Image (cartoon, rainbow, N blue to C red; front, side, top):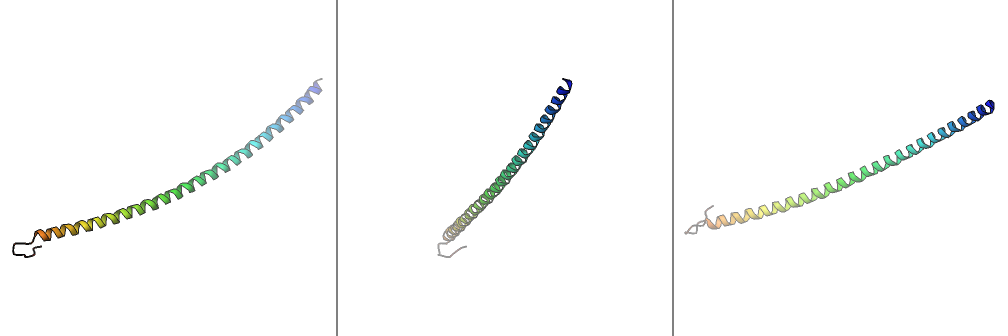
Length: 99
């Protein structure tokens, strides 16, 4: 009976070790696959974010340039108007132009 039990235990241990080994391989393979997927997703997200940031920067830069051009045009117009008013107010009774 002891011999049978001993042999049974050996078989059971061998099966358990084999199953444990297989589980480790499966888990390792699964982890590698998950890591690969996660790494790929992170890379894709980084590329998308970088592309989005580049697009936003380009739009913001264009808007700032347009706004600056508009402000420059307004300032030029205002300066011309102020200069014209100053010249008109500077005209004396004898119609001499004072600048």
